[in-house]
Figure 1: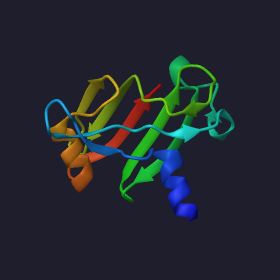
Figure 2: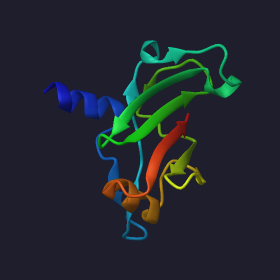
Figure 3: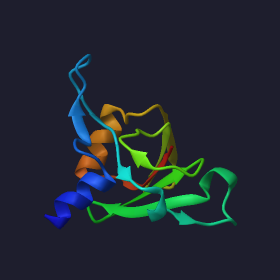
Length: 118
């Protein structure tokens, strides 16, 4: 029961879904987190002062950054930064991660971290 609640709070009810328009798998992180769970780091960049971090599939670091102090209840990120194991970074604007990256994340292939900005 605890793990079910944790998954719902950290990644949302359906992180992987089939896009109704394109028919392909995509990913979207929609956490349900109160602001008090976020760490406050005043030395961080202005839009990264409030953050929370966890491991997805035991190997992918996921960090949520808040641009302003607020609760996250059913809010999708404005954008993602996905770091690959070869050191390159991919920026995804919008609330969903496209098919190719979603498949790599699901397979835990080549993905080092995900930074989601709200």
